Length: 383
Picture (tube, rainbow, N blue to C red):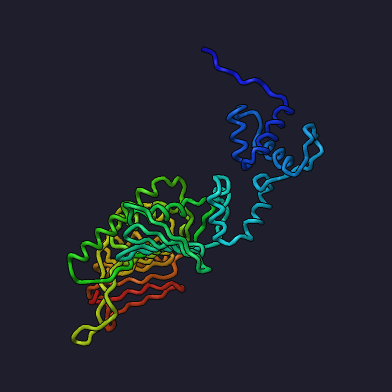
């Protein structure tokens, strides 16, 4: 059975049909679809149909009008990229956000621009999450409600059924990290939860954090290029969580990493009037120390996270670093001093240990300065 071919129509016949559709009182796009259903989809383009439709609407009935002398009109999609970029620069970030959702071409164009908003901050709390970027804030709640707040006070509210902040927020964080023109001075991922000594509640918080990072690892698996971030700050207690985020960043572009334990005790004193010491946790570096992001960074600050002895050599290439070791002895100090003073880019380091360091004489702090390079070692039995 052969395909049925619709008869060919002359331009004049097509224009008569357009005039008929106009006279029927239909809106322009509905009229266009109606004619295409009758004559075929390829009979005329929508742009040409729209021209004749509105010409008839203005009272011009000449079916043989010659369009060759018409001025050439350009829509925004055909304008030079520099012109489009100038137009976008006049838009508020909220308006750019709307424009990005118009079509793939606008989304790709905006994403490829070098973003002028330099900080991306994510915060996970006991009962929700908050994502801040480009003068807007996205708030995620446990029951799947998402609030998009703009700097001018306006907000959009949405509700996603059967979803929570732990499943929604990783995808929105990923969508920002996927923007091609993104260059961040700071990427900040914080855990901000109320500290409690009740073991069951702590275990529940840890489970929540693990669920978030599992979802983030799954969501970011679609990212095909490394994200350009100069400084990374994280509040974590697991090396695997650091590795999940580090793996997304471009080695060499990343200059500074700050890792800190996520539990905060209230700033208070105990029954004897002694200040409550902030807790620390143990962490390993087996995985992240092998990553190019670690090897090419210049500054490494590890706070309230205790490292095992015997791995100080992993820090010798940094210009500046801060860390807590389970133990510091004289041999470690001598090898550290020798290696760091030989590093032409080294500036300073601050090491802390719980044990009483035997080569300290009268002070709990040892400071060595050589050629404007400083090494500080401190004994703190409270950590």
